[in-house]
Image 1 (cartoon, rainbow, N blue to C red):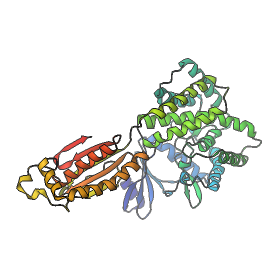
Image 2: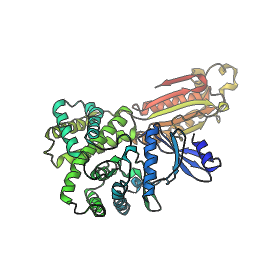
Image 3: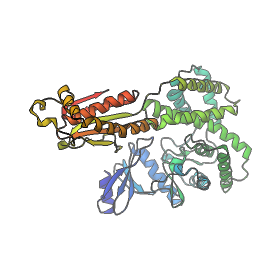
Image 4: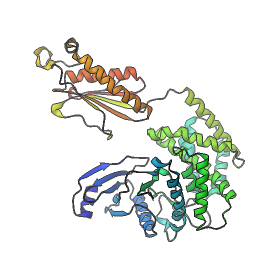
Length: 461
């Protein structure tokens, strides 16, 4: 679809389409190279795509820094937009000047961006009202709190959820709420911040966006940086609203910070605990640390919720201290014949190892070994009697082991290790089998998938 759209738009074929790193959503992004390099997007919802396309056009008309949509497919499921490069603000979050420049732009989106905006185009709802807040709170309850097993009184918890929804629901002047305003959703090009991924935006309170940014779990801003960013925001927003009471504003921020943190934990619970996405699992402890800091300041408005959250934090701290962490990593080890090509990496990550076993004498040249494989003792004895394969395998282990350890520690999900020979029957089978057994012995918590492709053997160790 993107290839056709590119050709229709620019009148020439592209030279390359390369997938970009996938994040939390189901949308897929691609860099399309050619006479003009652009980013292609494939979504699963035409309505969600329409929200982004409409908002991008509206913000562009206001002179706000966003990627412009260049072309859209007839079914609205894919589109092409400006390529803003690969540098996100998250990677430059130590640059306080860029952080302040970004925060200073936020009120332009919230106030100027709201002028003339038809909020009926927003997805999935037009307004961050009390019902939308209850959805977020129940998202936290079902996708995170319930997974901890901490008991609670459904009625009392629901009562305080409704109180929070009433207090924090949007009212007053129509302002645009970005909804997921964080440093990962800001690209830096030529020292200028560009805002992306605003398709979930809607009419809502301005405090929510500021809280989303400064309390982002993985950004880990210090209290001093947070205060500097709040001051920057207050100075910038004074262009639109005069006489903002800084003390009352900070009190409101504190309540929205609690709401946002619970919403984030719900998302991390769903994406991490249910979908097993490593990025989100790794972020859970950071979000819990944020919550611990919020509760430490005291909260008299929601006493029962505070009590349950404290119990949850205590439970999670105890569980993490005793839990044997299941590995997210699966090492895919395969044997193959070079005549039939190197096995495809279905993970889409690329990389890994390919070891060529053809430098050792081939048992397949001898009649007595032609009907058996590298799993059989006669072939094993033949290979080991030559002395070459043990040295070869030790060198392979020395290369692979550090990657397994690193991938496992960093929460990666896939590593591919391939062994090839002429027929995929003797030397490569020996190599793959011994490598898989070695990894499982040295890293017993890591998942190991073993495939002898030409022998039609596929198993999990």
